[in-house]
Every structure is written in structure tokens, then in C-alpha cells.
Image 1 (cartoon, rainbow, N blue to C red):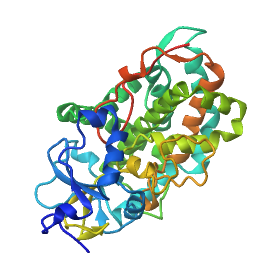
Image 2 (image 1 turned 90 degrees about the vertical axis):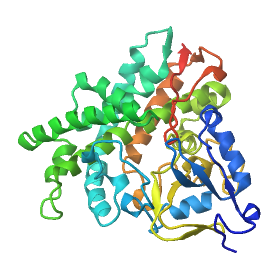
Image 3 (image 1 turned 135 degrees about the vertical axis):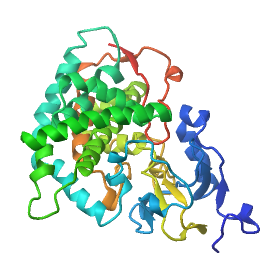
Image 4 (image 1 turned 180 degrees about the horizontal axis):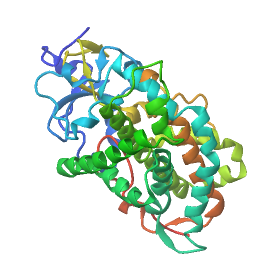
Length: 406
């Protein structure tokens, strides 16, 4: 039976009305919210922190299928009513997360150039060198916030070097990126404007002085195959690389290190069995993937999910984290198994929207965790775990700080 929200007897149908799941309890422990939602139904009516009505899909089977469903689209023109006011500069609006085919297909080809194996795999020595520099800078013993000293600077250094962002501007990019994934709309707007000014200078420079970097790939890489990218498309790609290549990876590194500190037997097993690291990284992504929800979509037509009809024009969020902890898909979903197989998580998306930078992220996570395991064997939490806080934001999960001693 297919039901709609207003159908008689709706309370008995497979959906629940959840007014504000992204509350203080969620930010303290989002996984408790997911466990509750799993018991209540496959799809949930919600209100976002910005006050918009939307639908949240949480079960693995539905999320996996809908990630590639052409009926869920990105462009805001499909929204019902005045749903969404884009808070960032309009120049960033032509990005992968806001476009559908054929525009998305074209932009995706350009994005794939930036993260092609020939460009990413040679970065492994540099990733390891940056990691080594960051850990060496800590000294032999002391106390540090590992988010600030390792988890954040590693990915932002690599992605900034890929974009040829100067060392002086990297601290600014970190600050702007933090604002862009938060809930403060004014800070988000200011961060977007500042990032736009910096990227605009880079685009102008790279058109005049090409180098061996991803800007050159974008400006000249598909000559004769695709229409050249317009300026706002270049800015949109640069924006996506900076934001997507930094914050989610930093979030996974921080949460993974915390897990190792809380489960010392797991840390010891990975030291003794280094061959488990590739599968352990996948398990860290499954359990601690920083992107809690996929980019917002809209129903281009009525879409049925688990017996519930999501009306055309509705905003839809697909919960990657909830799907990755679905007990109907994963045995003992809350248990970390470094050798879990198969492990078909959706932490990095699925289908046409699969994360272009997945290989780079895995390399950075691996380098950071191997350094922690082998160079910081005496690492300990400096505060009780219950004092740790997540940064506010319902799309990206990341620790504010990770105070440790070593």
C-alpha cells in the first residue's frame, strides 16, 4: 500500500513524523538518533535547522537505490515553492552538487581529471612526507589538539597544493571551510565571499600562467572534447575540491583516532597486522564517515519509498551514516571489524555522484592512522570522552577538538 502524509491512518503507515531530528541530542550523539529512526520507519518527515520541510531516508536499501535514482535531482528549479535561498555567492551555484545531467555529466568529466590516478597516485610520497612533518613537529612528548595538529592540516595542505593555494592563505581556507559547513548563515555567507575572492584571483592567474596543476587540467585538459569551462564553472569546481577535499577527510581521521584510543586492542591488532589497514580504513569510513547526509535532492516527480509517497517538489536527504549502520544490511553494525567483508558502505556515495576524491581520501586517512599507530604509541585522551564535542552542522560530522597527550 502506498500512503501519503495526509492519508487516513497515516500513523500506522511506514513513516514517522520527526519535527527536528537535528537537535542538541543529535549533535551530542547522532547515532542514537539513527538507531531510533531505524525502528520508526524507512522515511521521515523532518524540519531542517534552517526551518525548511524535508524528507529523510535512513535505510540502506533505500539510500543505496535512491543515490542513483534519476527521479531525485539536484537543481533547485525542481523545488516546490520558495524552498531554498542559496546563501553563497552565485558564482558557486554551478557546482556538481547543484546540477543534473547533462550539465553534471560534463562537470564530472572535468572533476575526474583532477583526481585521475595519474595525478593522485604520485601524491602518496608527499602525503606521507606532510604527515611525517606534522607528527615530528609535535616533539617526543606533550599535549596537543590532534584535530588542529594533524587531522585538519594534512588534507588542507594536500588539497591546497593541488590548487596552488599559497601557504599564507591556507589558514584562511581552513577558517572559511569551517564556516561553510556550520549552521551560522552569516558566517557561511562571509566565508563564501572570502573564498570566492581568493579563487577568482587563482583562476585569473592560471589562465595567464598555466602550471602543472589541476587548474591546467580544467582550463585546457579537454580541449576539442568538451566545451571550455566558464569562469563560474571553474570557481564551482575549485570550491567543491577545497570543501570536499578537506573537511570530510579531517572528520574521518579525528573520529578514527578517537576510536583507536577508546579500543586499544584494536590499535594493537592493526600494529601487529598491518595488512588489515585497507579493510580497516573502509570500516572507519562505514562507521565514521564524516558526510552524514548526501547533498540535498528534490523529487522531480512523486517517488515511493518503503510504501510512502514523497510528493514531487519535496526536498529529500539521504542519510549515509544511518544507512551504514543499518542492522538489516550489516551484522552487528555498531561493532568495528577491521576485516569486515563484504563492506559495501555508502560513505563515499554511489553511482554518478560517487566521490571523485575517494582514492586521495583513503591515502590521507591511511597515512594519518599509520603515523598515529607507529609514531605515537603512547597517545592518550587528555580529557574524558564525554567532554568531546562535535562541530555544529548536520551534513558533516567532525570533532571540534581532540585533546591528547603523548
